[in-house]
Image 1: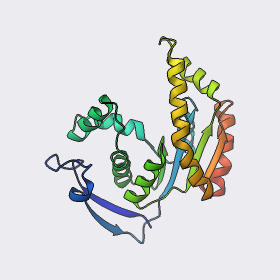
Image 2: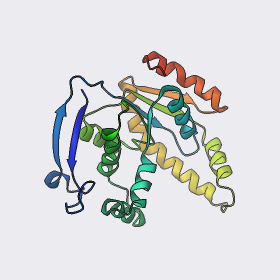
Image 3: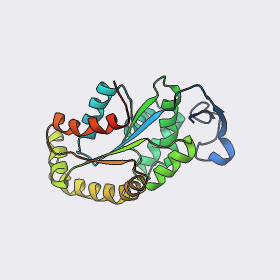
Image 4: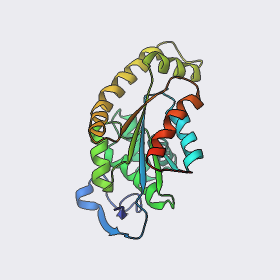
Length: 225
């Protein structure tokens, strides 16, 4: 059952202490709506250059999902110049990882404010810590986890092609990013594989060919447009 949450935190009032001090300062009021449809949540994973963003657009157009990009939500909060956004920006500038509960609460806020009950969460969870935080804070689990599997060489080529004009050492930077992505994602992949929710998609080919692998997955869950 989906639980709607009212959060009293810096997302609502700048007079409150940091959201990171969650135990003391974040109040939760859980309210169950028995008559509301349970949300259909899909996590979309894949390394940089795997083409998952393009496929997310196809899924949205075909099945009417609400697309939530973790990276876009963080960037939008920073651009808002809110107290919360400033905290995120400072963490990034200091080379720190944005805490899992911060990203989860941005995602949750979007889910809570949407009339749509189908959510496509792009680029999240990136790690086992992300996964645990999402399930603990929202009280929800994904119905599906899509992983767009693409060879390292192909992902490097795609990213460099779309970032033309940068220096050659981006190749090494990209390879490091991909190794980190693989190491952090593996526990998440293993966890959802064991639960029967994980689907690997061959992300090599043209957009339509790849999407034809996606269709049967949603059809098996009786998701229609």
